[in-house]
Image (cartoon, rainbow, N blue to C red; front, side):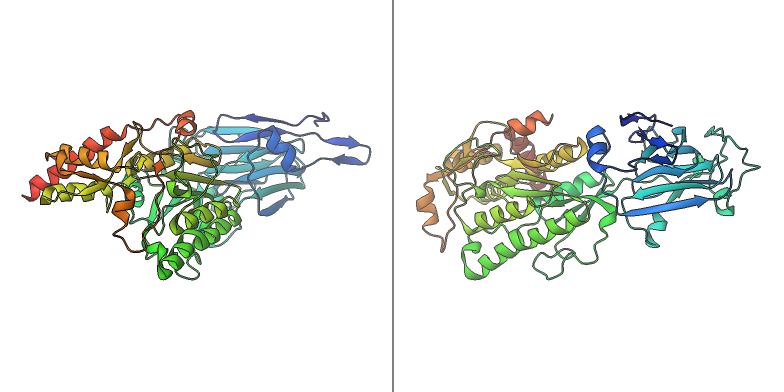
Length: 477
């Protein structure tokens, strides 16, 4: 028995499966150990896995054999009395599928078993007590997401200390499928709220190749409806990406628009953040350049927020609400261009129709293409970046709406001189209850670059986007 005062955690051949060596303090009366100590174990390398249920299995006889079961949650197993031979099999899809790890476990050791890894054990002593902490409450519905593999499958090569012919095994465990027929345990899903917007559509496109991504429309998650989060199966999801927002900046200055903006961009977001925190689901929230006053260029993530408009104020309040969730990511972006209504589409259509617009020449920023925003969010998720706030927009020189419009006309095959410049004051003077806009909407991208994500130059994306639009026009003609 380990009487050292040191706690050690080491990886195994199965990714995420960790073996702990634990101090056990023994004397003539018996022994004592800290079976689970969050602060020490997390500091030593154990995931901060937030268990919600503790199960205990008492096994009266030596040779009792259970498994191999893979449940849709993380587990932390330990032995409180006696000793076991444990076996674990990776049933997650990928290169590690079928990898086996075995170990003898007594009171001086424990294992952290990630979701999708099958767990089995055989008692080596009578009166063995086996304990496991789990990260989800057990329900009958959860059983449908279990996976199993047969204890005796020869392809696994598990050398059980006590022959399975002599072991005590349930009829159900004897009938589990062999590895070649075992159901892979898929990773938890990523819910996208606001699926009909430009970002939602870009994430939908990524979901064609990534089965984790599940997109919900406004009809399914209406932020203006009371109780819009009720009945959501939180246990099936690791992340929620909130791409939903009320973005009609001028309408938000009207009495009914103000109510909508605050409900959708702030009040509902606070409810979403609280529910995600309750269920330990990471929240990725998309915000905007409108939380700033626009006095500075290339602003960093820690720049003080100072919104000018009702829309900006409601989005800033939403950001503050999200900060209450320990596992949050805020991605601020600007000038989004994707499938749906956007500035580039508007300019392209005006060019096609022969209209010569006046466009603001004293507001500056960079476009963000929705495909890049979607890929950046998935990069942050997949690379396990720390929570916090990140800025994302296209790479390239700061431009104005006027210069961007001229480039759209030129790429569309039309004379860019048809675009005339105008000031923001002059342009907005014709709009009733016009919302004030930030003069500058350019971000520093150093933080997101440091994660390994390299933003694409917006001029490259713009050429691709306009070419695709022109091809559609030619097909329709």
